[in-house]
Each structure stands twice: as C-alpha cells, then as structure tokens.
Amino acid sequence: MSVSWRKNVRRSEGGPFYKFQGVSVPAAVKSLYGLHDGDEISLAVQFGSSLEVIEKPLTSGGEVAVGKDLNERLQKFAKQFPTSFVQFTLTSNKVPGDFLSHDDRRQSQIEFDRGVENARSNRKSRLARLKAAPKIPLTETVTVQVYKRNPDVVAERLDIAEGVCEDCGSEAPFPRRSTGEPYLEVHHIHTLAEGGHDTVENTTALCPNCHRKAHYG
Image (cartoon, rainbow, N blue to C red; front, top):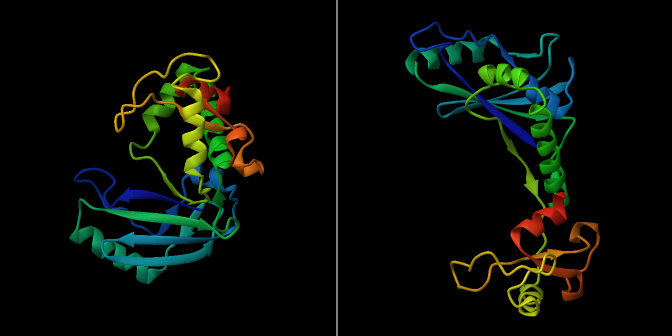
C-alpha cells in the first residue's frame, strides 16, 4: 500500500521556495501506517521527469532527511519551474503490498462513516480543521482482490425477482439506462470473501437502498 501527497515548490504565490532539506510526513499518513519515529520507510520523490527514492528512518520530528545532492536538484527544479510541485509517495516497509477484498473495502467505508459521525459531533472543532485541511486530498494506491462472478447467477436472480426488491418489496427505483430493465443489485447473502458460494441460492436482488442497508445497516 502506498500513499502520495504534493508540495508546491513555493510556500505561497511569489513567496520563498521550500528548502527541501527534510520531507515532513503528514500526520494523516503517519496515522494511516501507524508510523513512529525511527521507523524505516521508503519515500519516492518525483519532480518533473525525475524520480528519486529515499530509504531512511523517520527523524524525531517526523521527517525524512534529504541528501545534499537531491536537495540541490530540488532547489534547481524549483527555481526553474516556480509554479510546479513535488510529489512524494511513501511505502512503509512495515506494510508490504496490501490486498483489499470486498469486505476490506466495506470495512474502510464503515471506518470513514464513523469518522463523519465523529466530525459531526463538534462543529466548532470541525470548522477549525477545515480551515487547515489541504484542498488536494491524499491518494492511496492499493491492490484489490476481486472475484470473477458468474453472470448466469446474476441473470437468474434478476429474473426471479421480476423487478421487485426482495427485501422491502418495492419496485425497482428506475430502469437501467443501457437496457431499460428494472435496476436491482444482486447481493451475496454470505459474502464471497467469507467463503460464500457464487450460487443463485446465496443471492438476493435488492434495490440500492436495501443493498446499502445489507452492507452498512
């Protein structure tokens, strides 16, 4: 798993250049990886067409030291392209190549929803965080493990449902744009990630609301 962030080469428009003597790892990134001072990390530094990789431990200030040669190259790049940015991509040696299953993605959504719920509990604190929050979000690269589902199972379940949600009993909320057929989503009752079978008996056809409820309700 990797995560990336950017830093403009100037501190503000027309302002001084960053010195790039050390790269500060954002607190959100440290939290995501569970990183602590002294942890060995691998940091890719991309500027223009150049890419360099730093493999060093985090300092006590949560930074990764930049060597003299790379620092000079970054300074030169900044002065040549004063409106550009440098992109940093971190891969912790502690977290090699994660694989996310459907359930992992669902758990990630649950955790995000909890974060939203906590954020709503104190508007004053939320507004203060929003003022300091970066406008460009962090990015995360993951390898996703997917299952090759049998289309016959989906087709049979949709035919059985006849356009009616098998949970709430309501008709499909709208026709599918591509075919005009009633839009329902086929849900595995016992998930494939937990060893559930890709069979008609282990599926149910749901409207979007009931499908969300099945996963997050």
